[in-house]
Length: 512
Ligand SMILES: [Zn+2]
Picture 1: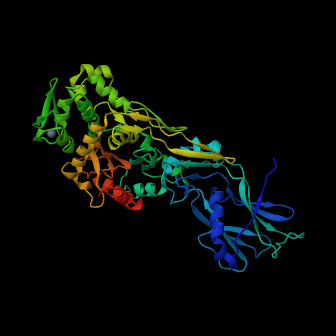
Picture 2: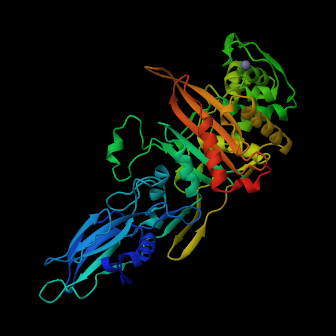
Picture 3: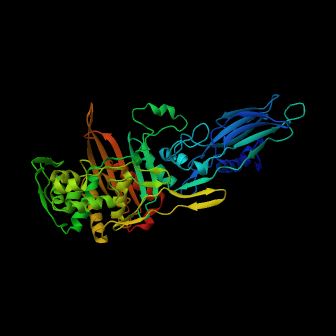
């Protein structure tokens, strides 16, 4: 196969500063893995193979998510044969040529679970790297060539040259690198969990992170880690708890019982079983808005008994509960659990558990994102998507947007928005209140039925969106394996919302 090579000048130490920018731009487009220092001795030159020319993965603004860190090299030409070494900074020596290339993964790489990693053959093993390997893969390498004389000595009057073959294709994600960084920075202390940030109006996923993180350059280290850092928790399914309550609230509004009130005494007897509220001495008189704001369990145990079981089941499935779905070619959420419709019809205690998101219902953070997007948008959501387009051999292929799914009437969604605002004003989400941007959200502390030596393991959630009047982003945060008494995720949500508001200049677009 005929290969077309492009000649490029590599910066030498005398002109290093002047052309470093050019080199940086070149290596960004080249991409590739950490250097393979294979010395190929041809008739006219010494050649070192550097990075594999695997195509890069980019964010929605064309910023590279792979290959965005520079690796410096020093090429020592003082001896009989050239010696190439990695180094931390450009070397200042008259016999040394310094240059840099891009490293595919580094300590600064974001969205590692989503990107995945490659093996020693430069094939994708997980994540986007695996799902889009046919687009990204390349069997060629970036090379540096050092001219030599007939006697085999280095020709020091000729400059080394970089040969850049045809790189692999490119994948452009819906991820926004700035938002991804904000999400990861504000959830660093979450040992096990996930964050998903979605553009509310389109369902495009702008950030998707899983904790703990792992090192793409040392995957073996993570294989025996008890915290299972290689699992992408953003795609997993977990007990959901009270962040599910707005789904029941939609059903109550549609059933015409949005005005239902209930006096919480701290518990409710259902089918001979005592179901507790989290406030054991009771919340007193509750309406729908207060019950959401205070996350009163007994209100929801009670109101759910008055709603047709099939209507609740169908509403949950319309939101994506109970199913796995695909966010891009080759990447899907785990299959979630939902109590069977017949069981809901015939068991009041199953309904009570279901009403507060407990029992056999589990969901991924992405499904909860659907629910909160629907409220933010006035009753509909788009199926979440992750890839904007791919580019291969000069041909761009755009991905279709996620299907638009109507969940409820605008007036019901708008009313629930006021309930989720009340959560922040006077309810369980008060710690999320911000002076910068108005927020809507809902907390949850979901029981998992599992225990460790410190007690029952709980899943903490925060689901919300902002700015209130014209929501732009929906945020879902999960902390898995928490214990009773641990701080909620309110501050994580507040800090993410504030940082995005400032970074994306959202204040200009809000009424606040
Ligand atoms: Zn209560």
